[in-house]
Structures are given as C-alpha cells and as structure tokens.
Amino acid sequence: MEYHLEIYRPGSCASDGCVKTFTAATPFLSIRGGDLSYGFVRGLDLSGLDLQGVKAQETDFSESSLAAADLRGADLTRAMLFNTKLEGADLRDTLLDGVDLTVALVQGARLDLAGAVQLARGLGAVID
Image (cartoon, rainbow, N blue to C red; front, top):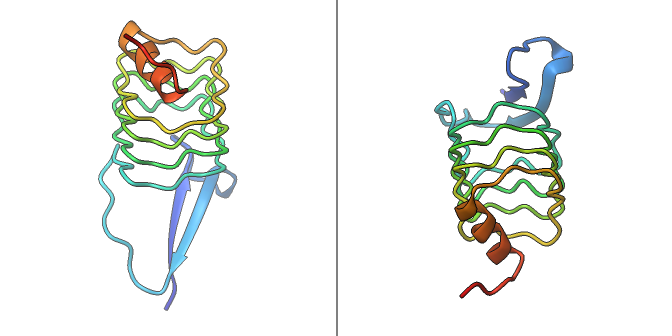
C-alpha cells in the first residue's frame, strides 16, 4: 500500500490547487495546523499566502517564493531562505533569528526593527 500526503493552497481542494505531493510506504504522522517545523518546502510557490503565526523553525524554503505572503507573527527561527523571493512579504513581528540565507530578494518586504536586524545578521552583517 502507498500513502499520499498532498499539500493544497488555502481554500482549494481541486487537483490544480495541489502544490506538493509526498508518497511513502508507511502512514504519515499527523500534522497540526500551522506547524511546519523542520519542514521541507523547497521550490514551492507560496506567493500571497496567509501564513500568519506559522511555526516554521528550521524549515527549508530554499528556491521558493514567499512574495507578498503574510508572515506576521510567524516563527522562522533558523529557517533556510537560500534564493527565496520575499518581495512584498509582510514580515512584521516575525522571528527571523538565525535564518540561513545567501540571496534573499527582499525588495518591498515589510519588516519591523527587530526583523530588520535579524535579517541583516542573516546576511552576515555585524550589528553593534
């Protein structure tokens, strides 16, 4: 028997709304809403999604797009954001401590002061 886990855009259950499908020989563990900790969502288009308050510590968002996504209050501690598009994303009140990134396309992203400092540190800036 083969088990499938399908991830859909919010509000969609049509097959064209499926953004990622996983298969396994054993059942998947239960997933709690809003919890992506230690996840792997590499290469997905998550543009414009409402991801307020999501817990995504150490989640790999590399090569993905979070452009115009609402991430207010999210926890992205130690998330991997290699070449992740963040243009227009709302990152106010988002925990970005220890994010791992090389090139973040952040033009137009909305940040509060703490988030700006955390993002600058992720880019290698030393802030005294």
